[in-house]
Image 1 (cartoon, rainbow, N blue to C red):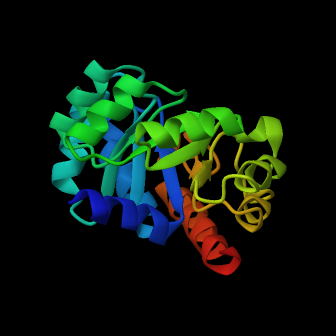
Image 2 (spheres, rainbow, N blue to C red):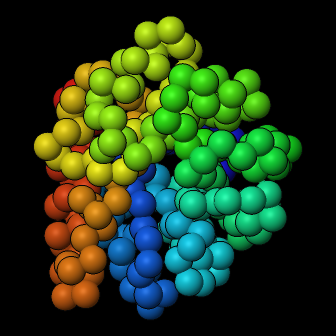
Length: 212
């Protein structure tokens, strides 16, 4: 998938599902269940054991899904996940070396920010999106606070996003949302209840469609 196509998929879907800490043997079931609910941008965090291999495997098995890598902390990890097939990269903080690596090899990047200064720094360094993190600490008001003076910056709130606050984040100006446990429910996965993930993904995609 091209850089433009990967960015477009995130923007069209409006939801990025975040997979963290799962076992490799259920990863395909989890990705499939989320995709069945309409979320086709899925991030596997780099601090998940075996993450690079999971990204490689999921990228090969799920053609209709954009598989990305999250919690990328350095340029070396960024390059490793790119080579494994990651179609986008997400960081928790501003790291210009990671941004540079993503730009060099044509991989969209959502850089973690909290303040307008960090958002502008990340964007001027080449970030495609700014991931407002942790969004639960500031609420939707921070999206509009950043976009007030900086309307050109596309913001993806992440961290504590739920069905209860998702609409407010969209209405504040978010272009997409990063959603973890509200979709990727660890108890449902342990119980083999993958339908619960599909149902949650469907609710979020419907909400995104209604409020953007």
